[in-house]
Length: 448
Image (cartoon, rainbow, N blue to C red; front, side, top):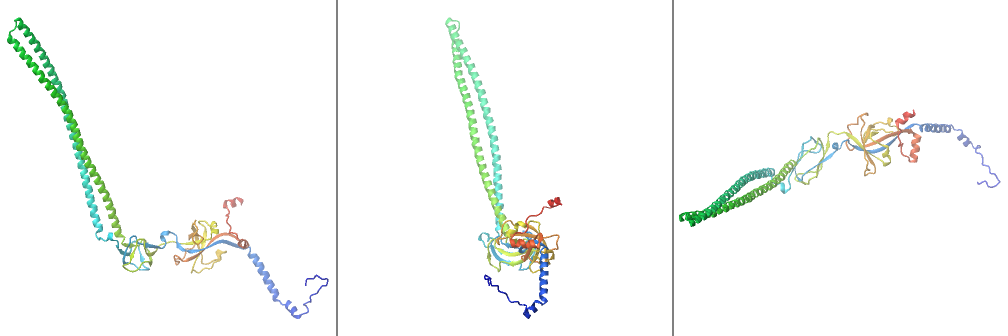
């Protein structure tokens, strides 16, 4: 009824019914009301209880150091499987042989390849030594040629000096002969004059004429001697030039042979280095036929099987788990929670398959959790859309159980601030992140 009319309708009273009176007077309704009241009071009180904010994550058990994680052993060279020395589950020490393979490349089929290469290296070394001896011999020969050249040049210089002195001597003789000719001519003219005057006989004139002719003949002879001395001087100079040219040619030829020997020596040394490199490679390759364990551990799985199968270089053969390792947990957190965590922060960890009772808001009441500490935070997002953090055991907490296996699942709780439950409910309903800002201890002390 809308009660829009003036007529007022009256509802009939239910008190006249006995059943209604009996229901109103039943005592359990009062008890229910009390229970609801008590629960409401307790719930209101519980809203003021402390609650530990946290960041949950999931991941798996791993190792703290990369060299302690499970690894695969690959072949460095290609080959054919000949013999297995281990089986799955075996424990191997570092350096133990796991597998033997044989050669499949035709370049390395020769069983005496290393020895033959060593002989080639020795032969080339001897050849290089021979070229070195030849270079030394040619160097000695060049020095001898240079010394001989110096002696020959000194001899030529002496000849030049002798020729100069002889020219001076002959020139002086020529001057003396000319003087004698002049005297002979004067005496002849005087004899002729005296003969005309009747003071000298004719025989004296003829004698003076003979002396004049002899003096004239001596001049010609002496001039020939002077010219001969000058020719000897010129010949001595020519001889020096010839000696210089001759010994320069000999020196150039010896140096050319020396440079050729040096070139051959350097080329041979380069071939020696190349052969030594091949010899070292062949020697190392012979040691790679036996695939050995890089560290002590357990053989998890044989990735290749059978005998006579060909495998390429870089092919995984077996996987090995190191025997000594330090466990850690890699966990993944949401990007929104990444700013709230930092290195050194405490984390609670529990493992799959391990008895655990977890109260996320009250970590002290949880059972089966272990203490951890964040040691690394990945700065790049992972494939699953989360950020990876690495957690190591907390040294101040009980040790993690030894029975956990690498790769088993793990859950983590990064502990944040303590807040009332009503604040946490309010934050969750509004979608706010946990408390981000941290109180500076120095500021708090100053305020106090």
